[in-house]
Image (cartoon, rainbow, N blue to C red; front, top):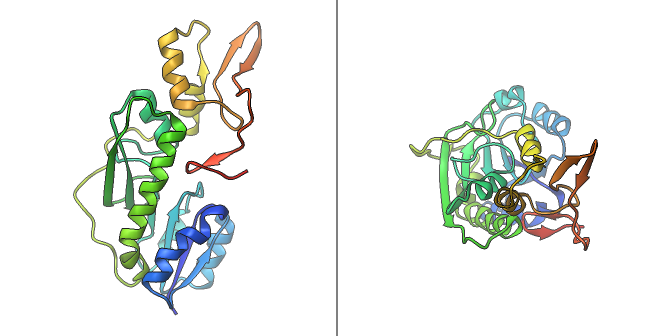
Length: 232
């Protein structure tokens, strides 16, 4: 029995599994919610298994990738110019006029594997992080729908293209540094960071004054948004 392990957020699991199941109705689709759970699932049955990750922060360990009979695949919520964490944030901060999503093979180094497909779209000047993340999640769904027949055929690797990763891979440390503004921040620099980061509750701009850290929070609590959708 062929199986596909889909690594994603719980709230997206059902909708993301649908195009894969429709492509190959007898494909067994399983989910992994942690790195430990993923490792046990692969150890239990490494043969005829494919990993696909979309919207998850789980980093697949090298030993897990090494047990698989073929490539594992990741849907990266950014173009090759923005590898690493929170690509939409850094694209907005840079004032990027175009953005996109990338399907690529997983490799031990995050966001470095051979690229299968890249879809791009324009970024209007008035978009904030929520608008860009919403468009990005829609682009990821469209790319998944288009490639689902190939991904669900777990015996055959997907063809790759010549496009390569070009940008600096951003880390949590880079994101935290962007969120923490200097005391002498200018109005223009504040506007750039505000557009890129937005307001809490899970992330927000901060500034140190008088030996204390002040955090920018929204006057109204809009809940937590992932993929442009409110999840709580």
